[in-house]
Image 1 (tube, rainbow, N blue to C red):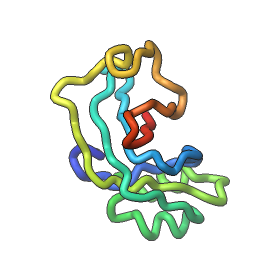
Image 2 (cartoon, one colour; image 1 turned 90 degrees about the vertical axis):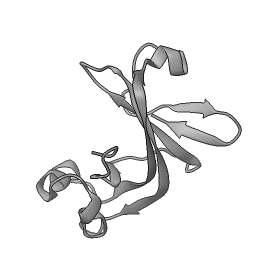
Image 3 (cartoon, rainbow, N blue to C red; image 1 turned 60 degrees about the vertical axis):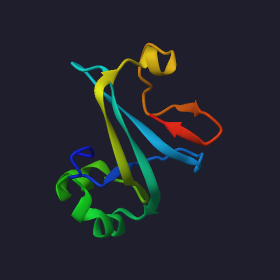
Image 4 (cartoon, one colour; image 1 turned 45 degrees about the vertical axis):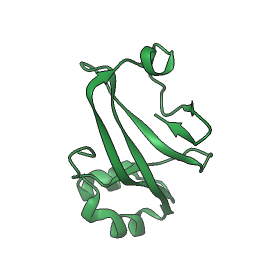
Length: 120
């Protein structure tokens, strides 16, 4: 949905501490089991879920019911605002891109030159 433009926000219960992160690699689980593309972060919204839904519902790409189930019991929520996307022509193996064999549980920082920090 992010790569089709239907989803303009990626929601998270917890966000990475390094706010210099501006690029997120997207890993598709089985049966693809590869990195399918990248999106760039415009900004990170942090607020109470009710307010967050109010600001993001038009670009959420998920139902209101799913949103509130996801943030159930949370006082704060995060939304990564998607600036632009780059869907790879061919999905790429983690080993090829990052030298690892298994995807991280949540996210992992990777070096991306001097220009930026990245998460996936």
